[in-house]
Each structure stands twice: as C-alpha cells, then as structure tokens.
Length: 150
Ligand SMILES: [Zn+2]
Image 1 (cartoon, protein in one colour):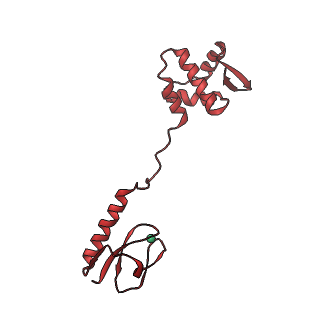
Image 2: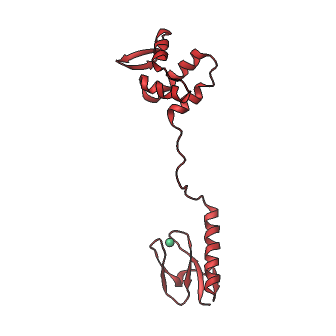
Image 3: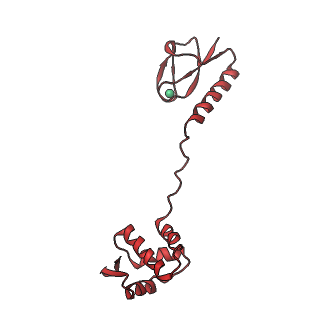
C-alpha cells in the first residue's frame, strides 16, 4: 500500500503519509519516524487517504472539546447587578441590594457606577438614588463622591 494514516504523538491529529518515506513532518512541527508508527489505515488511493484522514480527525476532535471560537463574553457586572436587583420587590431592598453589590464589586462606588446599573434598568437618576440611600442610612460617603454600603 502506498499510503497510510498515522496519529501524531505530539498533537494527536491524524495525518496521511506515504508509506515508503522514513519520516514525515506533522503540521504541529513534530518530525515523526514512520517506522515506529502504527498505520491506522492503508490504501493506494490518495482520495481514500484524504477521506480517512478527515474521518480520523473528525473522530479525534469529536472526542475532545473544540477550542471555543471566542470566549463567551462574561456578563458585564453592572447589568448583572441590575438583573439581580430586579428580584427584590421592595424598592428600598432593591436600592440596598444594588449598593451592596456595587460595594462588593468596587470596594466603594460612585454615582457613575450607580448610573451604569440604573441604565441597565432603564432608569437614570443616580443622584436621586444616592440621596435616598444616604437618607435611609444605607450608604455612607467615604470620600467626595464615593460611597459604601453600610
Ligand atoms: Zn503533530
């Protein structure tokens, strides 16, 4: 038989080789000595060889997880907080939850941070909310324009 299929010991991918050759270079850069390799499939037909390499690689890939094309975007923290706050029915609870979550996230938060959460909720007056939270003693100002939940 003129051709055979081997599996690269380094990268684990199947590769078609000419059996008369002594070595082959895998695409991963590994030089493979054919004498030591077990031929998984042999044929005289280049077409059959290509098909069987394709099949072998599909099977190899099928057995492991494909690397993701792109990491799924981690949920943006502000909208995550907004989403969580919607579980609170009471408006005060909700504000407290947001203030607490922002404090956990940032250590201390600003009106701008609060604004980003409110934006995801379709609201927009972080100033009012800060004032209300302070009124209720749910947050305190650590420095000019910076807040922590109590
Ligand atoms: Zn390889």
